[in-house]
Image (cartoon, rainbow, N blue to C red):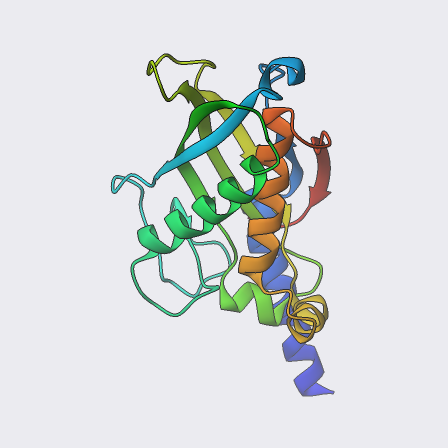
Length: 206
């Protein structure tokens, strides 16, 4: 009984910490900038992703570290390079749905990639957000002309924690797999090449 009380106290403290940092409404959003009738003629032949070194990184195993990049879905290493690879894979997948003849370049600049820590993922239930944001812009490869403005995109995603996290891992649904698939759908929707995936949702966490 004492152990259970201690666990509940820890869980409650964690939930309150996360709630204080970001409980509320999250979203996947982007502007209606691109006309699908235009983008259907595009073929994304180049994808360039930038993860500025000015973004802060945290390896602290806290419930909600204060940093621009928080990523624990891969072994400790160059987090900038890991985030670059994740967003590049996602952007290429999402952009591959355009099959037109005009070659274009997709440029993305990441501004936030705040996933969840081990502490949140394995000690809490139904808590946590993958908070991802970036700007995206399309250029004509031949002329270099900008075909869109640098649109801000928010690609928040519910993060699995506790039992949900363990079940997802057993299915091969790692954090990286989920994030790549989600961002790919967001990029595709913004490009007018796939379904509109914009939505808002409520969730405790950051």
